[in-house]
Each structure stands twice: as C-alpha cells, then as structure tokens.
Length: 273
Image (cartoon, rainbow, N blue to C red; front, side, top):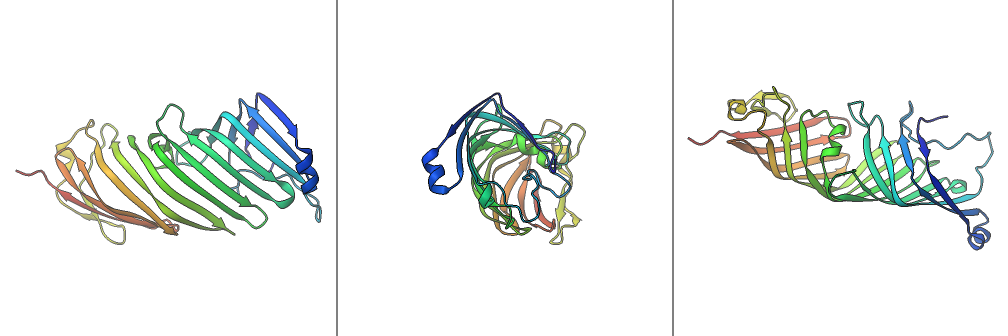
C-alpha cells in the first residue's frame, strides 16, 4: 500500500440508490458502518490516505460513495506529536467520496473518549488539485488529550471553544479564525523548576525577574482563565493573557508562523510584600 492507514468494521449495511445513480451516471452507494476502527498513519510524503494506483491515462471508476457512522467510530492518529502515543478520538457523521471527481467531503462530530466537550468538523478536498479545507468548531472540548501533540511535559487541563478554518492549496498552508482556551491549567512534572524568564522579540530568552520556583512546588500549577488564540493566513497570535503560578502572576503574549518561528513575551509580577 502507498500509505500505512488501516480501517476495520464489525458490520456494514449497503444500499444502492438507483435513481441517483441514473441521474449522475455513476454508481451511488450508501454504506452504514458499525463498530468501525480507523488507524491513520502518514507515509513518507505526509499523506495519510492514498487512492489506489491507475495506469497512465486511466480514469478512476465512477463511484459516489456515501459513508455514515451512526455510532461512534474509534480513530487513532499516529505520528502527529513528538511522542510515540497516538491521538485517540471518537467520531460520528458522514463522509462522501466521489472517485470520478476526485473529491471528498465530511461532516463529523468528534470527541476524546471519556473527556468533556466535542468539536464539529466540516471538511472537503480535491486531491488532484491538492486542495483541502476544514472548519473546526470546538464546544467545550477538553485540552488534555491534545497534549500529546505538544512537546509539553506534565499535565494539561482546560477546554477550547471557537471556530478555526484550516486550508492547504498546492502545498501552501493557511488558517483563519480563533480559539478561546478557558480554565487552562498546566501542572509541571515533579522535579521541574519554573524559572522566571522573559523572551525578546526574536524569541531568545533574556533574564527576567527572580525565579518563582521557590513560590510553588510539584503540586503548583500554572493557570490562566483565558488564552485567546487568533489565526490569520500563516500567522498564529496569542493575545496578552494573564497567568498565575502560586503567589506569582503576570502576562504572556506571543506570535508564531508556519515557518516554525516563535516569539514570546513574558512579564512576571513577584508576590507582594
């Protein structure tokens, strides 16, 4: 296979739609899956799903496939974070695949097993034109399961809401919209000291006020009531947001881009008295 992704189902209900097939001059099939499990793995080119090969000049079959997941399917995304563990989600919804047009679309409701909140996902793509677009609308979606996407030790808590659109056109990535992260709580691992540092505009660290390490312990978390993230084209911005760590507090803001450049500004306020 040209990708490492796999899928399995316990039961499949297939229904042929003759009238729609006649109108579209393509075989239209409704397929309903139960007990679905999907493992998504990227190949060397970053693709997680590749349509089977065709001979030069050969067109794909005229198929209009309409997949539905009336009960949650278990989805695992491998290789999306710095660790070895996959991101595990459940999903219900519909997927449309029109092979002769090289198009795919989906409408799904996604959540992390055993966690609060969910996200609506609406997406579409045309793989010949290498055009992809997805709109994600989290509603109180728990942040903890997505910590595996970040090089962040310890434990992360909180929830996300908002609307963000991601697109990719012929290899160029863009985004729009924003996310509000609320009741964010990060508990550093035992033995890790939080040092007071201040980042300059180029992203390099400069000495800031005295370290707040002594004001907390392994059981003290860094907290923020709200972190506002905004995305525009290829730039992600963190609006000035208040944080606290034990008796210490301050403000943090930042800006990053698709070229993996990051600039952070951190201000600290020592305990009064």
